[in-house]
Length: 479
Image 1: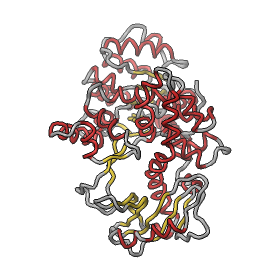
Image 2 (image 1 turned 30 degrees about the vertical axis):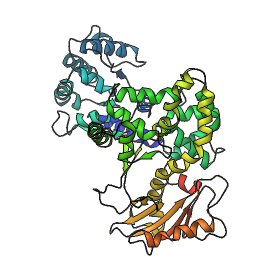
Image 3 (image 1 turned 90 degrees about the horizontal axis):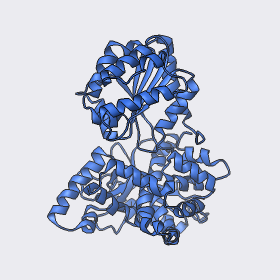
Image 4 (image 1 turned 90 degrees about the vertical axis):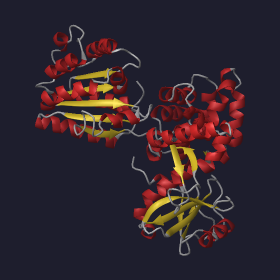
């Protein structure tokens, strides 16, 4: 098993749930969701193993029939290191139905504190749409009064949210738990203190904080070495994790998948609607299909982010689209287009593209991370405490663009900033002078403070109101 890193806060919350169960004797049901490879199963395994309690860790099987799912349930019951009480008797034969299975689980969990994990629950639910109703029936009658922690786990975010919607049987019975990838500070903790803040942020841009990828990068030592090593193997995690995640969410041929590829292939990592349509085929049919796909990718799948100039109305046409997941953003830009080269042993082509374009791409890819950090840090800076929105700003012709623009609740621009993600060169006085012009270009920015963001800060001839280095940014997240 891979080493277990981080998740102290999440484990603390889960263990607190267990403690309450043991104290009150009342059951708790959790709905645990998060994208694939974020470590949901791993953190729950750590919880189960460290608790010392009897458990069941069932994993649903994609496209399997209900009888086949129940066969796997029996296998998982018997493979537990600390099986549920009386499991050998209760599960001597395969349950006839999910109602029968949940009834047996309820009997096993009736008196002794236990943990029940139903991983990949959407796959089991997809095979039997009545599954949540059956569980609700047994939960209300028996399981809720038992000292058991019952967790439903899934990677299909929309389906997991649908599971607990107000018109579904389990509404009001679950507590939501969201397992996110490692944040930049957690990436830094995994890499170790010798790596430095820039290396940690670079690691986040490449891996997206996916625990498996961060672990692999730690062994490689640097981002450059990691990427080269991974590109040398067509079956490496960096190459295949993205493909497998997308295959699970988007069946082959779905237009949404093509939209993601069109957006991710852009050199700077974001695209306008017209540029996406232009790549896919500039006609009415394509435009309509793309509109539907973008809505699904933003509202339902939430894999796509829509950026607007700070202060613009939600209806503005000045929209830019980007892959919201940092790893997938990297994957679409540097991996997907090179899979054929990597597969035929020409990984040198993929490496060459990475070495040529990495610095430019990184300079734009870091901006959403900086926006998040500035928003998080605002509370600790007296001059920024009124901030309610952080993003970028650009005009209709794209002739003027500012990397950081922060506004307050009244839409007054509190700060404008520049991001110069150069490891060894600070923000210069000339660059700050250019930034100053933004006060007269951006509406309501006349009194805006000037913010410089660079790994090593600002040069002696630059005098911004606030400077944020890589170390400052890293401090925005908890470890």
